[in-house]
Every structure is written in structure tokens, then in C-alpha cells.
Amino acid sequence: MAKIPCSVEILTFNSAKTLPRLLASLHDFAEIIVLDGGSTDGALEIARAAGCVVLPQTDAGASGPISDFAAVRNKGLAAATYPWFLFVDSDEYVSPELMEEIRGILKEEPPSFMVYEVPRKYVIDGVVIEYSITYPAVQMRFFHRDAVTEFVKPVHERIEVRQGIPVGRLRQPIYVPQENVFFPTKWFQYLKIEAVKYKKFSIGKCLKVSMRRLGVAALYAWRYALLIVSGKKPRAPWKHELSYILYNFVHIFFLWRARLGA
Image (tube, rainbow, N blue to C red; front, side, top):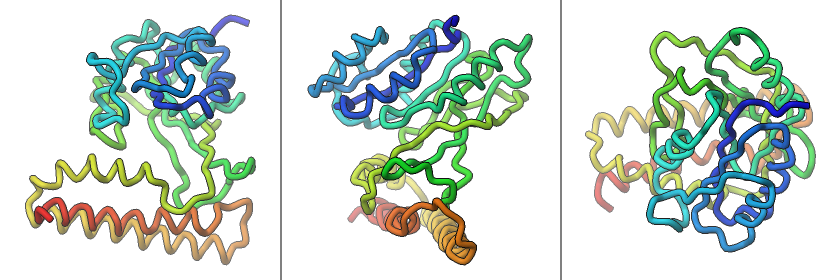
């Protein structure tokens, strides 16, 4: 079967444990671009053996943990040779159904949309989670390069869509395996990156962000209560859901600590 004419971007840093699973799920895509931050665990060898295009995340070479995700994403976007682009995290993997859905879209003349949101589903202990307080978890992950400008935001990066471009939504998911741990350490890395911009916020803007975060925490708590009452399963474990609720309070702490110069 012909390869899917689409470039796929992956960011890696010591991702040897999860990379083989992801690459296996991408076997039908024509180009896979791996941007590496200086892995020492064999991730580079795995990527090269799979035929990936391997590039350093920065022009200086090995960089370690990323300080500006959008900048690295944009480097992969510039290196892509196909007009259609999909980006996936190194600890995720693409469902076979999603791969075939994308193949079908690219056979259309012309495709119905130029930018697509993709649903994401957690996988915990091998079980696909159908119910969680953060669902629907959709992100713009698949798009035509002419329909977008660039990635923005140093953390929780997103692609900027050109004005007037419609956005569709795919049906099939990207799977996101989760270790059943409380408050992953990578979240602190994200908060430290965001804290840099908070130093420049006015008190009024800090208050607005704080109120928004409190609103999200309340919404998640309400959703969790509804899930418990409904009895719907498989749902995410309580520790997983509590982490997402508490993240908002920790976010507020980092915000004010950065703003007040603590």
C-alpha cells in the first residue's frame, strides 16, 4: 500500500522506552522527522534505524529539556517536505483507525478541511480510558502547511491558523499512555517556563488568570462528581483526575510567586 503523503514530527529526549511503539504506529506515513534534544539512551539509533529524518532541536546541537516548544516545533515544520503535517509526542501513539482516516482525507480532491483537531484518549495500565474530566481532549494536530502560520507559545504550544481557514475534527484518536502517578514532574517544567512571562503581568491580569484557573478547577471537580454518580467506565483513576484539579492551584502559586518576585 502506498505511503501516506504526510510529514510527521516527533520531539525526543531520552525517549527510547516509548519511541518504538510510536514509530510502529506511524509505519505508513511517508516522512517522519525526529527533533532530538541530545538523547543518550538509544533513541537516536532507534529513529535512524526506522528511516526517520533526525535533526537537533537547536542549531547548537544537544539541548536537553526544551525551554521553548514552539521554536522547536517550527524547526520541524520548516524541514517538512510534504504539504500535510501531523505532530505527535514521543510518548503517544496513533491508532490504526486514525491512520486510515488521514489516508482517506488525503485521497479527497480537495479535502473538506485544511486543519483538523484530533481527539486524544488516555491509556492507563493498557486500558483505553473513555471517561475523564479533561475530555473532550482535542488538539489541532493535523493540517496543511499553507493553512497555518507557525507554532506559538513556549509551552502548551499550538499552531496558529490563518484567518478564514475552517477547522474540522477527526473521529479517531491519538492514544496517550499515562503512568498511574500523582502530579507528573514534567508539569513543573511547564510551569517554570510559563513563570517567565508572568513576571511582566499586571496585578489585574494575574487576578484574571487566577480566577480562570479557579473556574477550571471547579469545572473539573463538578465533572468528576458527575462521573462518579453516573458510574460510567472505564474512567480515569481518582489520582489522575485529582492531579488535573490541583494543577490549577499550583499554577496560581507559580503565577504569583513569579509576579511578586519570590
